[in-house]
Image 1: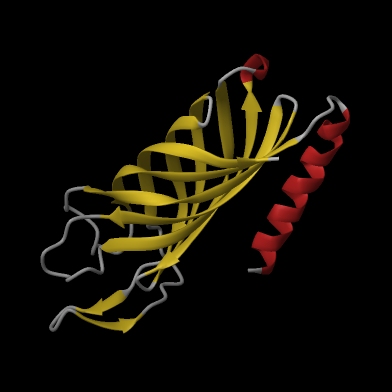
Image 2: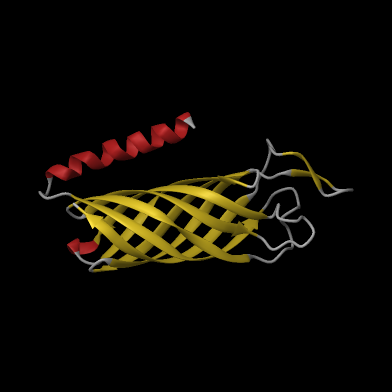
Length: 191
């Protein structure tokens, strides 16, 4: 968790000098909801040969806009993982995710591109990913299309005879997630 704090502080320090380029920074508060299609790659086998999963994603996001640049941080619930009838939810990674992204608003207009880092946790799983995407904003409404490139995902180790969880950490996991998300949002506050 200390490294996550270091990443957030480094991102803030990288963006703050950009505020001097243009006056009138804005603070935006968005509520967003939509759908995911996710899959899992690699790992010890519990996630192999299973189809991907459609799920819900939703939550809140704060963005500080400084001219063409913005920095946003969110807190969202994301239904990810794979379909699995036998593992009773272990392959269904319902996560609480915390994305932090740097946004570039193209020509100061309604389109923007974004990229950053995301930490997720839930269902005995920890997930690190790099979200990249595009956004379109019209007045108070927005639409976001993003893909989260998984860097590292822990997986539960299971007792294969009873499908019971015996350890929630895998030190040598090569499991990664991949999540495509489409969300619509509404900007409640701007100051």
